[in-house]
Length: 316
Image 1 (spheres, rainbow, N blue to C red):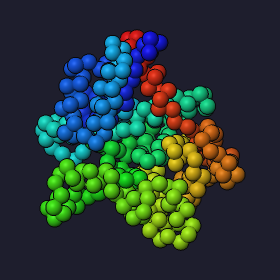
Image 2: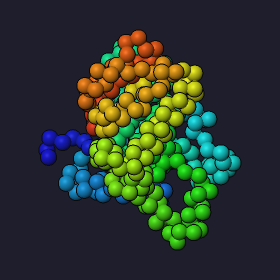
Image 3: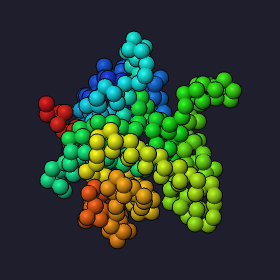
């Protein structure tokens, strides 16, 4: 314990205050408790973690590492929802984005692997939680998660995009409270909800092989949602130079990478089949050498990025 000089905790919370890394003090903890109402499922474990660290490591300086800080550069057209300004400002309803720590670690690796980050990059962070980031000249340009991590892609148990009218209708008809519906959207939907069996992509692929139609549907929806975002972000950036797969599924499932990229040659995305099939959690370019868009698998290093940012914050 005497060798530990500092500790960092990953903070997933909406709000401008949490768009920056900050030292964890009494004022920070007060802000965290106030944010519990907006993101309780993500913040309660973080609060418990901080409290445990404070007990085990009394006196050690702690940093709150923002999972949204990378997205502080979002332009207004990506940051804003379609709300009147006074309502958005009153309740702080903006797109904050998450998985920023992962994206930042990938951007740092791209600079090392390719000497310079391409102008137009899309990062697909695919795991239990899944998100896609458009990165222009090294900065976040758009991202699929929004005010909370619920928005965007279908995930293991999170619902992803859904019509706001459908949410209101469910509140009126299901008998669930707002808190119960939030838990339902976070824990009972997504791949688990569609397959009616499992949120695990490896298990879904095996079930599909055995002829399970619901498993196949869940995978098809997952792949389709990712392809739509790749197309949209390519259009938004007026082209694409690099497509990156990261996260547990992105790094380890050559099957999912192949299905996502299949039929995207019109965007300049063509895999080298042999390289794709052999790549498992290794930093490597897997696109056809003649394809105009490079495709790479780059392992995320969230822990390393957090350690780096904690050290930088403590030495400011």
